[in-house]
Length: 276
Image (cartoon, one colour):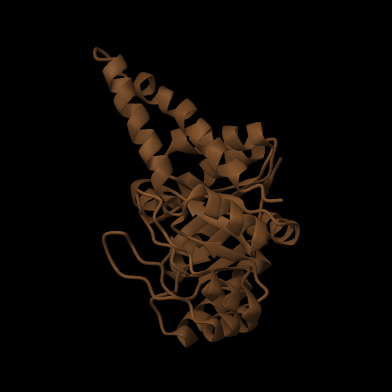
């Protein structure tokens, strides 16, 4: 299987009533585990390199790693730059083999967000790369508060950018360690009426599994980003490995047990979004 674009997996999901997991990668072990989980379920995934991942490992290295895993996989895999806060981040991703980029212009005035996203779309589409944008602002559990997406701004973005997917804010919050998020389904429906793009929810770890399944089945949300709960699974597995191997100083020995733990955690996430 070769790497695929975001549109390749989101359009079928949107039309057939399921969602794809955008899985946040921080290193080799979790990326490998997520692809193994995708193969075991037979369901495509999106491997995501966010700002933390890119700060730790250069984008060109991540591009090669993601593409290697995608091209060896038996299911479609999207190689995605998550939260590109500058056009330069996104362009470097395109040049490094990523098949999808997210330009996060959510902190900008809507006209500037639209203008920058539209210019990126021209370059990305010429390279066969998909673009995700964001309207509204998805806040953080211990940081900035959210700003709900306005349907009229979402409609403008939908009409004027040519983007392939739209991330929205309807009660979802980044970095929540407990599933306590209350999705505003009325706000979501208003955005659905105003747009026709595949919709994305960041902060999926804070959304209960049954609500994630409902979103996948009954709404146009067809991508949910999952990071925190998988990082927690990794941390718990690594702590167990350190206890089980008190004399070991070999990083491969210590890290290998995290792969299986992450694979099983990812299988649950992926399978939950199968929809109807």
